[in-house]
Image 1: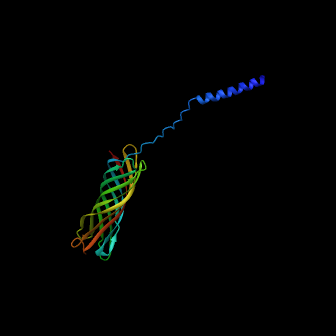
Image 2: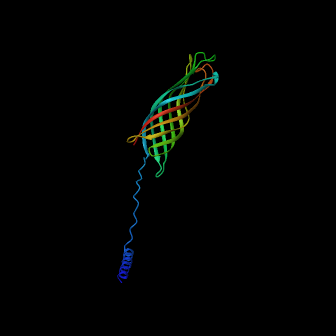
Image 3: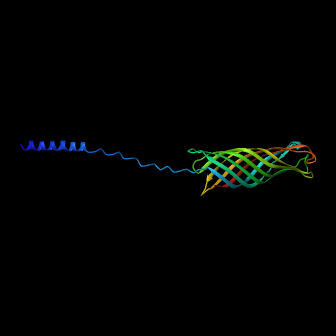
Length: 223
């Protein structure tokens, strides 16, 4: 009889526990913690800066069947504007610069025994830029108008000096520094076309062209 009583009591306790558990409210699901997404660097804005670098090029003199290789340094100022599409990494920009330049090269041969020199005194560009921003680093391609003063001289004769317009294309990388400062390094290929150097500027009528490859660095401040 005692054994039956104990068994009955145990069964009642088991069913009671199950019933209470069934009546308890279900536990609310745990909400995942919010993921923090950092705000990326925004490249939009007007900027000004300085730039400088080195160029090496080629200048053919058609009437003298020869050429020289002008090279030298440059330094100047930059102004531009970037627009970064909302919610996108693409950056569209316009940039212009004006640089004092000292590119020069010369040759001498039987047709030009006194020496023929090509010299670039200044250069400017007006270019579009297309960049893709990885937060604070932006590689870009660029291209547009190039202008410069091309001077062609033959020793003992008056020189020819002309402002020429051509084209430029290249690319680079720009990185955001502290505050609103950015720094860049870029490569440009520049073609200023040809200038005529005829009598009395040269002893022979000739066409003098100029092309160059340039590596420049720059420091900009964005407003």
